[in-house]
Image 1 (spheres, one colour):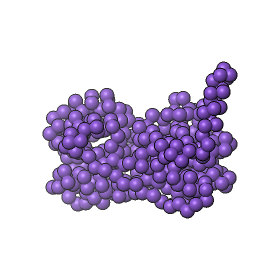
Image 2: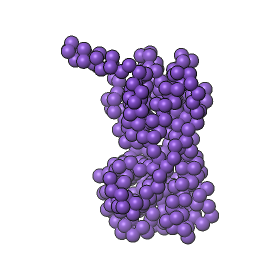
Image 3: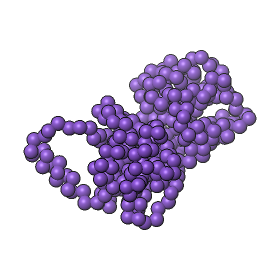
Image 4: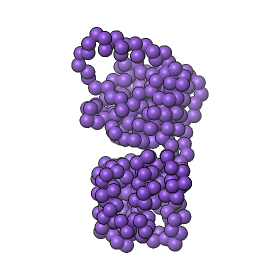
Length: 313
C-alpha cells in the first residue's frame, strides 16, 4: 500500500531520486482510494490499475485510510486534486465523506470512477464493479447446487447502510427461494472487520446448531487466516463433513488456501485485477475526452475445494 502522509525532510540525494522517479512517469497519474488499508481485494484492484496504467506510460497509486494514513477518503481525494492528479478511482466507505471532494474533482475536469461500491451520479463519471444483486444470486445459487433440498441458513454482511451489500443480500434471498429458511438472527451485520466477522460466524455456529448453511456476502470471515483456523478447529466435524455449508464472497489467495484445506466450502470470487484494469482504461478515456462506458460490470468465478485441488496455485 502506498500512502501519502506528511513526510519529514529527506537528504538531498533521496529528494533527487524521488524527483527522478516522478519525472519518469510521462503519462497520466491515477489514484485508487480504498476504504481502508490492508485489504487484499483493494490491493489487487490497485495492482490491476497500475499494470494497465504503466502499459500506456502512466502510473496508478493506492491510497487508503489506516494506521499510517490519518486522512479520510474525502480528504485524500481533496489533497490529490490539489496535487493535480489526472484521475481518481474510489470505493466509498462513507458516501457523505467522499461526495463533496468527488463533485469538486469533476467540476475541475478530473475524472472520478467509483468501483465496488457506487457513488451518486453527480459525484462520478462511471462505475466499475460487480452487479451486486447478480453476485448475491450467484452466492445463493452456489449453495443450492451444493445442497438442493434446502434447509436453514444465515447471512453475514457488513455495513447496514451499504446499498451494494444490501443488494447482495437481496440476491441471496432471490436465489434460495422457499426451499430455504432464513433464521431470525440473520442477517448478522456490521462485521466488515475480519476479526469481528470470524467471531460473529463462530457465534452463529455455536448458538445455532440447526444451521445448514451460512453465506457471507463479503470475504471478511476468512481474511484473518490464523483466527479462522482457530474458529474452524472448534467446529471441525461440522465443517469438514459439510454439516453446515459455508459460502463466502471473493476468492483471494488466503480464502483459497482455507477452502483447499476444507475449512470453508464455496467461494464466489470477483475479479479485482480486471476491475483495476478497467478503471485505468476508463480514467484515461475520460481524461482524453474519448467515449467510455458509464457502467462496467466485471464477471465472477466460483471455486470449490475440488476446483482448487485440481488446479493448485
